Length: 186
Image (tube, rainbow, N blue to C red):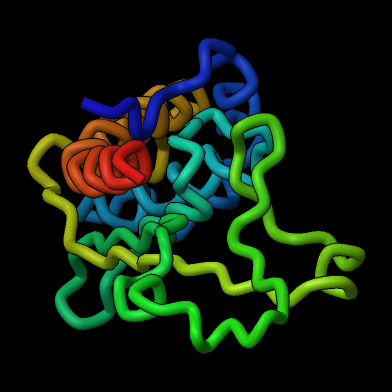
């Protein structure tokens, strides 16, 4: 299985941020559902709130968000992945018209957005996939009570992020495995 999402070894940075960010959890404390609390914990664990993030991810993952679904109150993930061009564009290059099209630039093995300089010289066509899916709530910790200590909030936030890392890996890992396998075959 492809290493998809994982936690940084320096959990102290996240713990300190969670301790200092009680207002980020204010609306979710005492909630009977763990969704808003888990979403806030995830937001604090990922860039731009924490950069580099407490949650790290595969080089094909551009963004990974977890938010409350307004329809049913569940937890929805939105993960943007770097992808190869669709087969319809690779079957023939007639559409290129010798313009020097470029795909995703890579820097030290990471996919990066082209610089302004790159864009001034060549057209770029960068394919992405957007994965949007519900996540299970079963193992998420309950939102702490209104009178919870900062340490309790930080510990629950770490637990929520750990569960979300596992669930997102289960969801996105097979896709990344296929994308990486397809790339290696070309």
